[in-house]
Length: 170
Image 1 (cartoon, rainbow, N blue to C red):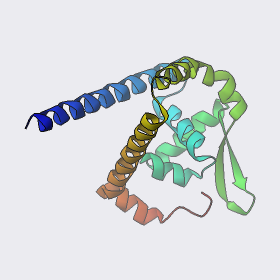
Image 2: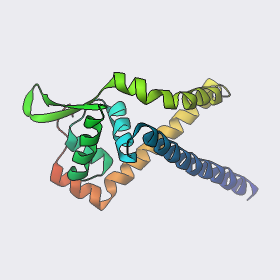
Image 3: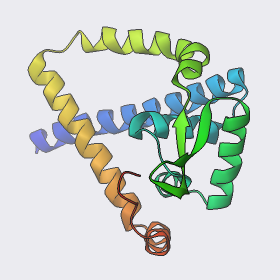
Image 4: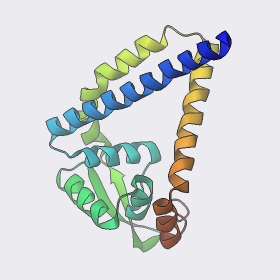
């Protein structure tokens, strides 16, 4: 029984740590968004585009779980502020592709995150390769579980069914 209690306590420390990290990241992202004149959803769209590359507005709606009207409003703000461009897909002129202005992001947003990147690198220095692989595996599984949870939600399924699968290359 002592082993089970010890494991439960260790798991609790991880869960509390994750909740604290999420809360801290949300608050910090809001501070950065405020500093550069963006809303929190605007910043999240920039992150989605950084992680996935150029996307269609429809794919952004799928990934964010936001309505197409909300996505249009966010993209309007980001385009006016010069952080993204909407361009016609050269292979299908009916499709619009949203791309980041990487130079502007690097100049106006990235510097706000430099301290966090240095801090993360410093913390990672405390772990050997095996430990880093375990942490990487944990994070990969956590993200996959979260994506599966979102896909299983009734709203996500109905949006996906209406929207259909993302187009190739979207």
